[in-house]
Length: 359
Picture: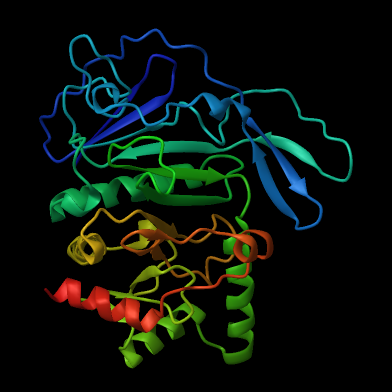
């Protein structure tokens, strides 16, 4: 793998990850860009003890441009994009409209009981391929391994930044999910706090360890593998299963069999084994209703400095599509109370997906 670091016209970092050592990445960014926005504000909700980012500059971000104006495609004469090169394998760059950044800004002041501080951190975009019409499911195993190498590289570097407490790697796919760019890509958030979901999960894992002396995540994986009824696919290093208490109509968790805290901990064999399994599950999702399935693919990694001994890297993949012409909306119970109601039996979802993977 060749790794080339350069800068965009406004000073944002851009990194090429190439399979060929002779890849030429000398093309400069010739655009005239405005100054980068200041960091967002973080405000603490005194009722939930959760941090909320206030990032007004994101209102102006690019929204579903036509393919001919895609900012994630390679640059070409007369049309300059976020990627100066004429082609690329995998590329990562700082988001132009970040939820968190290290840009200087005024110290926020908020009345009432809410605390406030700058939204220091970093947000990056990961482009999986220069093919605008492709998807992650289309990537060959070597390209998936290159993407995973980029994810691990960025996890390590972002974890070392001052003030970063958790690194979150994810992909949103499909207009139904709320994407703003159609090009196949994901994102990485370097949060200046431990997210509510991770904090709660680690609290549960700590109670489980205190009560049983065992690893909660390993116990969940072992139980699902033994039961088998919700397993969608598996190989020597990974198991994909629908969780027994799935929140979403079609939800699949992918666990490595060996406990590692984050993507950096995976070895070469585990990285190589992930791609064929994962892309098979993605193709199964697309095949269920004969239309591209909208999804969120979320890597759960250990926080930078806390709970690492309790964490077990895994991906949670889920879709809001519950039928060919129906979506799962987060209505009153889910949005207001955080109490999910799932319309699809996890066992039935697993059966349907397993049949699609097998076929």
